[in-house]
Image 1 (spheres, helix red, strand yellow):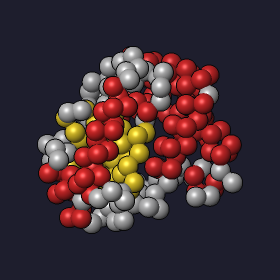
Image 2 (cartoon, one colour):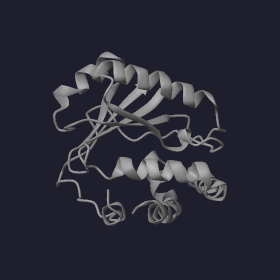
Image 3 (cartoon, rainbow, N blue to C red):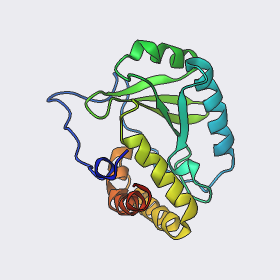
Image 4 (cartoon, helix red, strand yellow):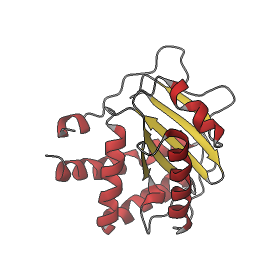
Length: 194
């Protein structure tokens, strides 16, 4: 994927009156940041096996987000990216994922086809995108950068702790840490993209 696309952070707004939240769901309010936990890696492996079992072994399943970076404090919720051929074709993957315990919570077809399914045990957010989406590529670049750049990892950790102290819900927390995340991400993209 080319650098220009990865550095374009413009987003189409949600259609008037549309909510990304499936009925009965909304943004979480637990902003507790936990110390790094080696169990997050094994939680991901268990989820990867469940998802691959549900969707087939060729499906792309990546551990992303803060729990994928050793040494980084995080909300104790494993983030997973899953790439499917067509995220708008929910019948091709949602029932299979629900059969292994995931629940559809977010539907954002206007934003890179994104769907989000939640898992209670282990706690996880499973993000579904199509093969042309830029966001999962950014997730991997950011993860890999933080794994190899401890100064940026520590800077991002400080931003996360400050953002969580502001209270509210997870969307507000994300906005409060976005400037630091974006600054690090832009440098990582510029260093890694051809």
